[in-house]
Length: 250
Image (cartoon, rainbow, N blue to C red; front, side, top):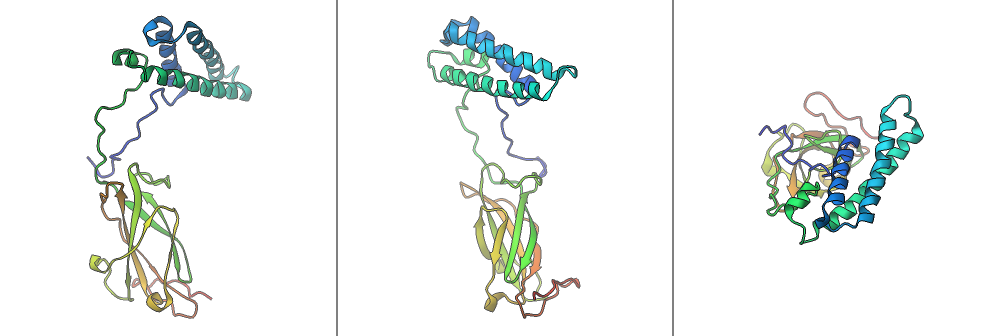
């Protein structure tokens, strides 16, 4: 598996995500509970589901046509879909919890059965991407993303924390020596602010690395290292080694 491929995928809702998928699922569900008494759904309840489904189909079809698609129709379609999903979910959970209904019948109605053996979540295969968004006197503010979901601030599934480390080095000191890494925190908040001590850190450079941590204590690979000078008011600004430097705080 490529490292760029997300190893943890969210299972889609069993009713589907799109309007057409919900329509297909609900149509099958309505057919099943109407025609199979073993589900234990009364004729009146089955008729209620059918009527609600018919309303949804009417608004759905009108929303698909340019001649009838209006904002009120789209809103009515959305609200009817939400009600249909809530009603169907309630009856589906009732059927799912009924030991007298076979697994085959539950599957025929589109009801998702719980996995008998849960697939364990292994060690993370992706890494956080760090970005320093601001630097003030004695502080750095970092934002982080997962390498596979750069558009989202959420941590990957199964991840509880990002472990943040930093090598606090003197200017010109070779970075990347893991033995010199200091633990900066088990991070959940995004963005995250790091605070430094004047006596220990003024005039030095922070070289950051991070990795994901699961609830089982499994660690992911290290992130790439990013660096930023630590500055305080009245302290000369240090250079990064490539000629770049932060402007000294006033």
